[in-house]
Image 1 (cartoon, rainbow, N blue to C red):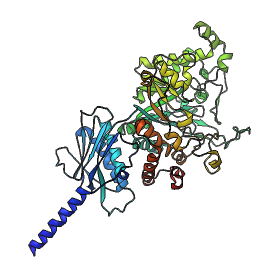
Image 2 (image 1 turned 90 degrees about the horizontal axis):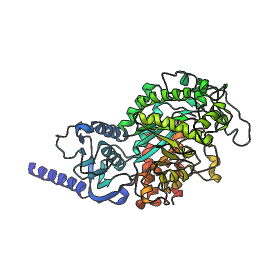
Image 3 (image 1 turned 45 degrees about the vertical axis):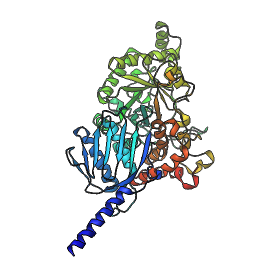
Length: 548
């Protein structure tokens, strides 16, 4: 009897082993977004269980901890993290491979008896983890077997800059929301968070040398209601005090949280326009005596910084503290929508134009930007500005963020300046997600313009008019989120997802492999993960009756 039992046990073990080793997979088993550069389907499946261990080199400890946390969050699996000298069978192995060419590249090898994620750097390993997470089953009973299809993936991104922007000036969001946003960025293998921290409607970053920036500039006396003022209707306000800001300790916490997810945080300090909140706090840096008040409505305002030596010293003090908080190579200085009326009427500004032999007020704006760039360059940083910084002449080392279509980006690339493409036509995620006839059931926005998920996916960041040499100056693209009509975090998520998902494939995957119908199928799978993570995405964008 004992011999019979032993034989039966052996047969069962062999049968079970064969099941995992011989399982047949199809392309539908690999719904990864963004689409990998090269994916080879393999035979077999890896059984993920509580006995599985995560094994990584010491330099990959944070990546191992991240993977462990995500498995716990999504599958309630609490896996042990072991040292690299642990036996490798039936485990997930994280490794640095110098032979991989791209600094953000990775390989993911899944076999029936182990998983190996290798990267040129820890960043590549992190992106390999994101692909692995998207291959995990979602929404199954935890008593069922958790298996992952075998595969060999060799992958790296198309563009170096893959960004998402968030405006916290119009509406302020707590730390928990900012961290959630960073998690969403990481999930999509994007690597830059552009944090729009100052606006006419609120100054959101603590500057210790100038405490009134947040004490006064961080709060407004009320907020415009609905669409008043945009449709020939008078402005009305709720008269409810509104505001908030991030302390320097909170800023450091965000930067650290982002770094752990291989995300660079680029701060934006607006100048010389969009400066009402700052001038309300320190009116001496304006062109008039004021009075100034933190803006309660949206739009563009005449009030801008005066181009005085005192103003430049003020801004340099601010940027010095900003640089201490943000280690990023770039500092975004805005430069957009600068109305010139005050400079036209300022005796000081007009005298400066003559003294510096500037052509006009556009030349003065260029002078202003160049002064700031020179200071930042001297401190080892480079500037990014919206495409208006082209007006009057481009600062020597500036990177242009092209938002008013693509002309600014093309002009900058032809001048051999780095460019980040973010045209409103495809990359503004505060526009409606549906056509005008369907907008009555959607949360309001500031205009009737719309950008569907498919339209985002159709975007090509490198203009065909550029030569091969000029094309190299296109660093990548970014999605912008302006929050005038997003007072709550659930509305931010609703507007961002799944448009961010579409953009992530645009900036990662090769132009030749992108296919809308194929992407749409994979989109159905990733939204199940959004459900699991509690994200409030626009479900109508993935309804089956809208399948292309």
